[in-house]
Image 1 (tube, rainbow, N blue to C red):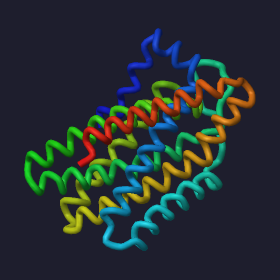
Image 2: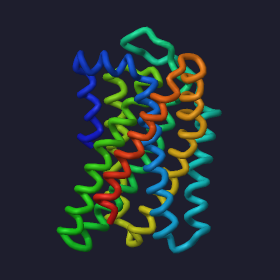
Image 3: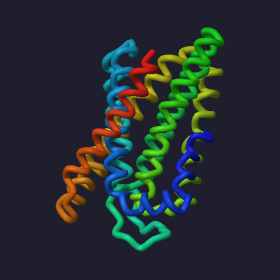
Image 4: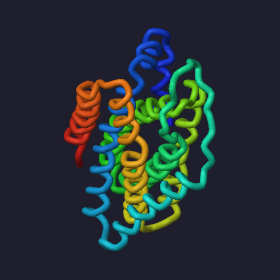
Length: 236
């Protein structure tokens, strides 16, 4: 939960100014990170699920939830610290997807510690390193959505608190691993929808208006490479 506040580093004046100048590229970087997150979640869901129908249903449910939010939630103008053109990214959808992801993490942690303390600690280290990159990336998306730094950090923290729900679910339900896979699939579908409906169109629009296609490509590749490194080092 505390890791969700790592975006506070970019409230320092120097980093904040740099972030404001490069927010479009940082949103694309976040897209690269989330692309690998989606791949990892889909791989985990399909590999570990006892039923292909269950895995596919979880992913489609995540897509349906995000699509419904896109049409149901009213568009509104967020508070910002600087005057700048806002993107059409809806930060609320990434918060919902992250909430499902965090519930799954909570379930996995309980299941891992139930096996043994070393397995639990290994799972914790992997999740911590994974979340360090992902939470900063989601902070960039929230800022690109128009939220102020303070509100982005607060909402990111509230979303991370859903890991406690995962812990409670896992402690009271026997099939902890199957539950974790269910939430992983839902989160994968949600993040995938955000990539296709929000981040990718936003990147294309930014390139069309301001150019910088090469920089966007580099930013996306950096996000992919960073998450690939984390997932390679802590795959198991």
